[in-house]
Length: 570
Ligand code: C2E
Ligand code: CA
Ligand code: CA
Image 1 (cartoon, rainbow, N blue to C red):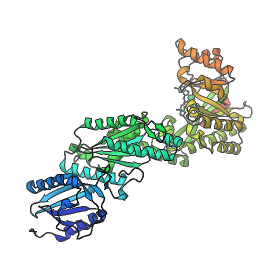
Image 2 (image 1 turned 180 degrees about the vertical axis):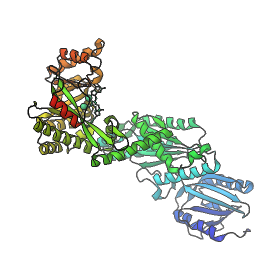
Image 3 (image 1 turned 90 degrees about the vertical axis):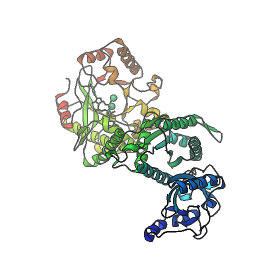
Image 4 (image 1 turned 120 degrees about the vertical axis):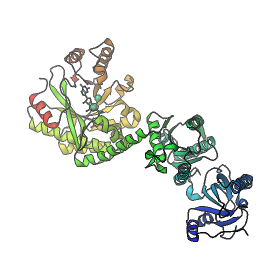
């Protein structure tokens, strides 16, 4: 046997007892000295099985030569080495492992630690322990991926010059594919995509499935940014080819978020709160950016995005409480009859009185509400609040001709099954007559799922309420389908109205819309009227109603009461 100097036995043993630590020591000739408990368990070995036998005996025959060479080099030069090797499991299968080894000349020993990798999963003989794998695709799962990122990150901290990139890849419109083709084909697609991703990277890099339609890639030891972008390009080229799933040819595209480490800054102040899983979070933020831009593209993470994402998250958390804390308010903007300038009704517009940030515009928080699902409770509150107020106005101003009120309805609200019974209950509770409530929808809300939306709109009409098509002219504006919609009012978007007193272009458009509306027996409201000149032109064109700063900005309820009492514009 070889010479072995005394060591701090307890320290040493502790490492070998850690359950997840895959460790082996061998002498300079490569004979196994000791295996850690973790390695014995993960590999299904007997404790005494390999003592004194050459390490390479557990290595796959094809990897033996390279492994032997690396170990010999280690023994001669006494540095560190990193190499992949498939190793035989107790049950005869092979497990892909990445080894990191160091020589200790003092002890005459080589220390080697391992972690599982997907590098040879293409090889049927090699496997990773099941707990590390995604059941559907057979790829490493999130925990193995993070483990590997951590490993790489540690290495980059030690060495300072290791560059790596974490990519998050999401399928565009997967939900749609899943719903239209069924979950079985959806699953099949995911496993095809997993294979495709694996086929475009180097064997030593890792592809993992994070869950849902999201995958992650770790590219190690990249030379520069362009080598990462080349991988991105290969991914996108591969994934624009259609997949054939049974008889279906499915076209997909992916959005990719990229986070790269900055090895030189790692130990500086910028890297103080840096953690390995942060790379995946950053890649996630960048991927969602890429999706927002319409998909089929990539975005490289930068720290500004992080700040924005944090701010956005805080906004969402605050908004979640805003409804309960009574921080939401409805403002009211008058709608007047152009012929005589009399007040016809109000559009209710949401405002958020934030304790620190003051009054927040709906342009800022409605999109957050829509994405987080909070639009349902907010929209519900807006309808209830508006009906309650308007019922009160009826009682307090019995001499005023009956006023209408309009409330905006977002696409997310329109698809909710509960919407119709909820609106019905709110009308009943407030005592406000349905005929004087209008709900404003946009063209995009209707087009998203035309059949379902149409059915829902008809149900709303069944309650006796009226419907307005908002922002008309800005969407798809297919005039041909207008007559199919159960709407009563067209609201011409501000962008056209603001141009009616300029050259002829917008004027012609607005005139056409007014003519068309008359033909279809729809009421027309022009939005964003700011000048007397615009009002005059619209009146001459035969437009019924107008709304805009010329008459009043949206105002709080107490001011709305003053407007009612004085009769705006009259
Ligand atoms: P919108 O439904 O098109 O509402 C009209 C917007 O135009 C309002 O902005 C109003 O203040 C503004 N506006 C009215 N007249 C003029 C004018 O003469 N000049 C100019 N420059 N602007 C004018 P606001 O209140 O900031 O609301 C913005 C958008 O937020 C609304 O556009 C609507 O899409 C959304 N929103 C507001 N409240 C709600 C709500 O309760 N639910 C939903 N789903 N969306 C809402
Ligand atoms: Ca509106
Ligand atoms: Ca509008």
